[in-house]
Image 1 (cartoon, rainbow, N blue to C red):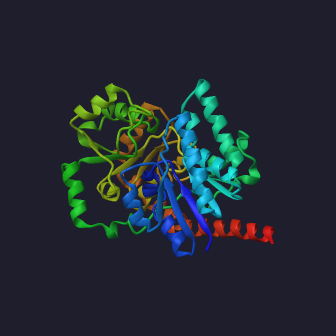
Image 2: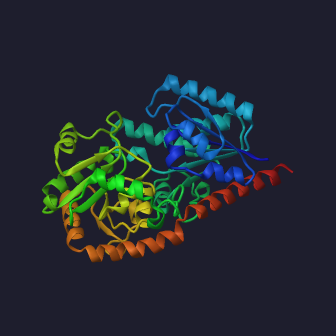
Image 3: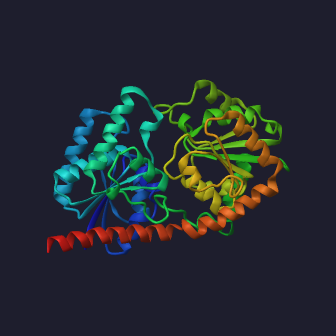
Length: 389
């Protein structure tokens, strides 16, 4: 039985971004070990995936001494487990996981790339992050960006050799669960709970954002655009997600506006996002950078119209005035106008959503993505066996 170790920096990534993958690989005959840092989610992850889990105390910041400890723990783990494949996700897990696997002589080393953290910073910090990304790719056998736009960026900027880079299936790290994100499969009690939390009045326009409440997700211009819009008194803005004030904080002024505004509703992150999408008139995704945004797939699966920024990852999913509305990233006035357009042209927006719904079901079904990943594992493993014979 071949063995694979899947590594993320935090267990939340195993729970949300890779849900079901480990269980699928185990059902196909692979022994799977999950590795992540500490977190409240790891017990739930073990239950969901039915695979072993090992804790390595990763941090999401640059912490040299602690990182060396984590590297040593990974080396000892790999020496004890002797995996056939090490597959990493997220920057810290990628760097340390690929380095430890290389030191241990593990031939199949795969890193999945879902975004480039250095795009949001400048100066010496940016140069360091670029160096660390390049080092991760150099240590990898293959690099799997989760979108074609990310692949093009890697090649154009010579971050990794093209022969190492593969996009799995049509893109996306995990596809979309078409059974969970289906209006036909919603449970009435959860739908009622979401309605009670938002409490929209009759004919009130519900605008939803889903994701981390950080500057890089475009929260600041979203709040400014919403408050300045002509529809603020005819709508509600639902912010579905948690603050991360230690990593990419929004301003205290924006945070206070969120807390004080009577038409802005903050809901901590929940697994019931499908229910909030079901009661929304539009999803707004104003992010400054994305690899491949899962939330757009989820909204499309729920036939929820989309307004999003014109960054590459978003443009792989949404085409302007064909399957959604696209506006120039970081442009507050353009975002305001897009939300106002969506309010007035509801029938048109629903037409965009219907077209995107069909496209997403055909291209990004989670089952299809899982199968493509499994086939890639077997390809790498079979190549390794043929070379050793």
